[in-house]
Length: 362
Image (tube, rainbow, N blue to C red; front, top):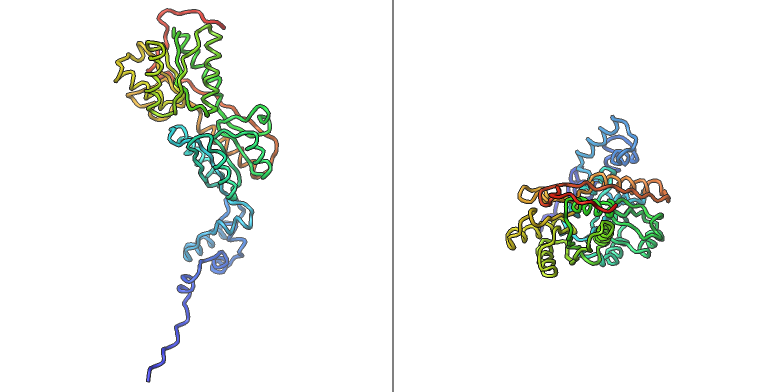
């Protein structure tokens, strides 16, 4: 005859907690407070006494409680997630922008959901993906059409454009934070021209880059105002190889090196600089001045010390996060446009003192 199996032992409190996820209700029971008090303790900025907070945190630690963000979002109708749409992380400017934006958004209790575009034309697919998530808002550092912006309005999703400008028709209805690309480009041309440079060349960014187009147009306008010939323009891809290829293409068109070459970003400028010095044997800055844009970290390295323009990234990121947080909390429909100026970095790759000062047109 087989012996009967003994009945199972009743579950202890420890095994009971192992059998299911610990909830805020369990923490409330252990701490002797209400469930709403537990929720307030895990909500940044909520009003709760020090005594209650200490009891709840102690109970949560003992029970190994982790707040359920998904459940909280169903109650509050907020996910505390912000989508950040960034164009081409291989451009060193964008990782720096993402780092600053992430830090500033965390300051507002938000987490970042990243959408990286290989090229600006991919924004349609990125937005199709964004709509699948219950994000509280979006910061877009990519070109958005009027139709795209209209979709944000239709879905009531707060939007801040970062270092991108809306069209003239939408400019006064979209929140944006940007560096004055036109003023920065004009300032760079003026500084180089004042030092005696006459023949300019531009290694531009991709054809679909609105920022590159804005800088190029401003540079051409300023050269015309100064009575200087139009620059030789070649298209690059914001990468190191484009800078070297761009310099070779410019020399092929001119039959010689220009006086100054302006690159669409620092990475291309570094590629151009290395090609000039180590492949073509061109004296920089004695024979050729090289300038970039963005002041990313490698531009400051001793072997480069690049002449460039710095965008106030920390201030811009803080402004973008503040704007978006205000939109989320207040649903303010009054659009705001915050414009920051660039800082000229003299570096050591451009001649900035004219040997023979020459008058310039106003």
